[in-house]
Image 1 (tube, helix red, strand yellow):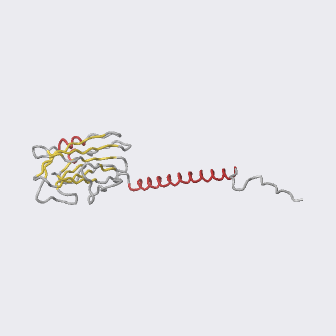
Image 2 (image 1 turned 180 degrees about the horizontal axis):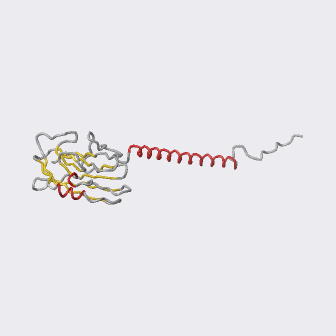
Image 3 (image 1 turned 135 degrees about the vertical axis):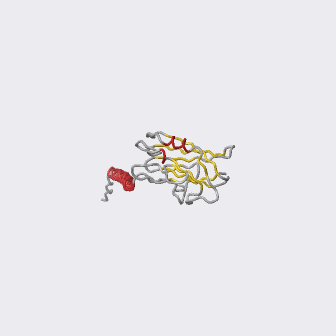
Amino acid sequence: MDMDPTPSDTPTGTPTAGDARWFNGCAIAVVVLTVLVALGAWALADFEKGLDGYGQLDQKSGPAGHVADPLIPGATARYEDGLKVTVSRPRPESDGTYSLTVTYENDTDEELRPGGESSDASVSEYSSAPLVVRAGKSLDHYASGYSLTWLNWRESAAALMPPLGTGKKRTVPVRIKPSVRGIPVTVEVDPPDAGFRETAYFQLTLD
């Protein structure tokens, strides 16, 4: 006499508890691996920053802020350690002068001195200093055919001198007078640092 086949205890194609455990285990492993890779990449980037110092410019997009690729007015130079410096657009005044501001924002983990230790070296129209405002394009060593006078350089230097605490912001006023309208002007920002800090370049036009 023919016997009916014994039905299987587990229907074909139906997931079992073992299958679910295997799937969950794989999913957890993928998540853990992703987290480990991300942490590894972050640690490597942080290690590389530690090797070359945290004073490097760290622009995510647009101009890099270097002498051959200066920032535009209104842009912000961002450093790896959290310092941010913004140079405003120049505003023409009725007497033929121009006003602009240089704003320092200290998001680092320590107090900074934007103007260094000596007020005599805080600002300059001609040579290296923590803040330079000069006639010419960023790659020009010397302007030709025009000049620029920094009218309130003492006020600017005084604003730079006090220490800037963590989480604090300071705006430095700059008032300049060009020999003729329409000339290019370069602002160099080189905040002193115990280690290394790149100079940020901004190029403006006095329209």
